[in-house]
Image 1 (cartoon, rainbow, N blue to C red):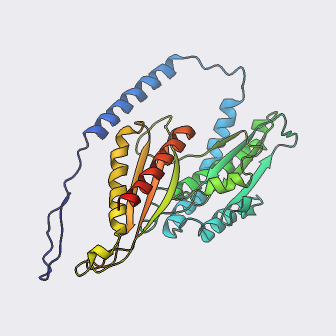
Image 2: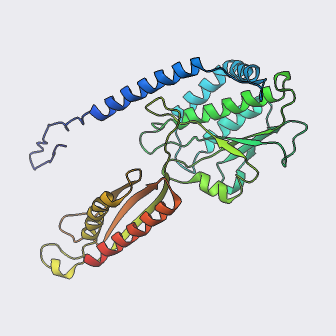
Image 3: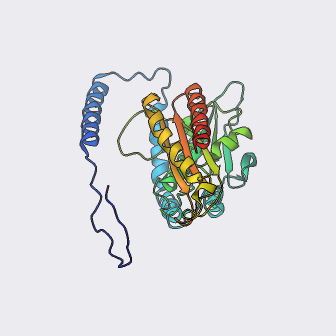
Length: 330
């Protein structure tokens, strides 16, 4: 951390924040590297059995070739979406870019799928597909960006990965290599995943009905086979107080920023009683306009993350109690 202030002579402190230690990240990288090496050695020592799926090598090789053939189109998606980032529920241009690419390769696209205007869906199935017998696999593609910093989370890459996987798998599914395999593949464009819950809205609209498995890929800092993904709830908390002059009559005010500050500290103290896998983070987005005025309103944005639904609800209830208690204290 560092401090910086501007006085009447405009002389800011030029010190830089201290760089956090990388010791934990370095140890993590070393551990993953050793486990990857051990897994590769074990894989080489095992005999691969293909009795249940003798076509697997040929099908996988065919999909790989199709992906290579799509390289220029997928590169275009990555670069175009990166150059034109759009925020949650505003991905009109991105939706069109992806839909146009699917139509270019002969696939029909439903825009505004499941009641979400910037979502879309496309699907392909084998001639003998029976939903009661054969599997349906959904591939999901995200494409919204973050405020100010654009596609820092790589949703442009997720979009290209989803579209590429769908186009390649769909072509192979209808080829000789997949003869005898019956199934259905669905591509779902899922907007509003940066700070919002686009998939939740789509699920409420029926997006997962009839789906046996849903897959997608997300960029990460490490090469891992499995990740403990945590669910998230978001909340906006507004504290309402009474404005007053902070110098002449502060006793006539009720300071909403005090409530937000107390809530922020309470959330920090609560973290030590949370499961180690779960997360709670918040920012104060509004806390007044001038130091001479007791703030009449303060706003917080917060996320609750948990591995389990029950713990998610428990933590959410505790968070409600903390912010209500902060308002009472203020």
